[in-house]
Each structure stands twice: as C-alpha cells, then as structure tokens.
Amino acid sequence: MEVYILALIAIVLLLPLIYLIYLRFFSPPSPTTSSTTLKDREALVVKEIKPEDISGKVKPIDGNKLWSATADVEIEQGVKVKITEVKGVHVFVEEIK
Image (cartoon, rainbow, N blue to C red; front, side):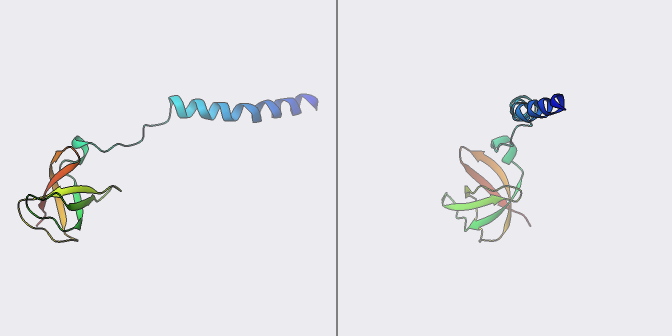
C-alpha cells in the first residue's frame, strides 16, 4: 500500500515537470505574421482606404491584427481586398472584384 502512495506522489510531482519539458521542446511554434505570410492573403477593410494615405486599416480574414493600408484607388469600409505588397507594418491592397 505504501508503495502505491509513494508512486502516486512521485507521479503528481513529475507531471508539471514533464509538461514544461513538452512545452519547451515539443510544442509547435506559435504562428507569426510577416511580410511573406501576409502577401496574397484576403483581408477586410475596417477603415476606409485612400490613395497615398496609410490611415486606412485592414484585417486579414484569418488574422486578428489590424494593418495600416493604402491602395491606388479609394476602397470603402467592409470591402474584401487582397494584400499585394508589404512594406514594414504597412500593406498595399487591391479590391477583390
């Protein structure tokens, strides 16, 4: 009986350590957003986009961050666009027709 209790205590104490080792060495990396992953993705305009003005905002369809955006033509809020180019934290978009 004592052996079972000691084994149970050892397991309970080792589980957090095993979990931390798993997180450190075996868990998949969290997804990142970069210029290579944004290009050619669809986004939704959340603030009107004007030519040569980076005050417009878009949110990638499968993302959760807002990006400053500009385009060659005005694009209204709520329109689906395609990200064509990324320069730093600003994106250039085209309306999807």
